Image 1 (cartoon, rainbow, N blue to C red):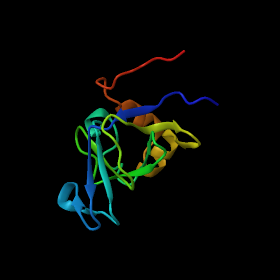
Image 2: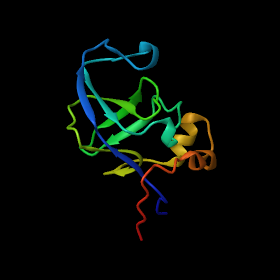
Image 3: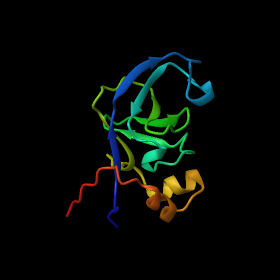
Image 4: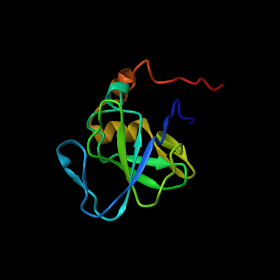
Length: 131
């Protein structure tokens, strides 16, 4: 079976975090160890679920990060262990190497349905049709 879509974005900001640093809405997320916080320009106004915090994100360099601090209106923050350069691709839905994130994974994580998630994707998301 070939997946019908992928959702990717490029890193627009990357900064180091120290263990215990707080980020996000209400400073509810605290870094479990030293690492890096990367920001991508996809948020709940694009249709990515507001309750997507904790969801995996696949970085093009092979790292697996997690969305932290809540999904903002037009951006999401991801905690990773190693530095990531601005411009690096992050996959929220799709495959990187032998790792993948499916719509089913996102639906289960957010206690939603695939149909509801698909319907929420905003027109401002760039669509690239691949034949």
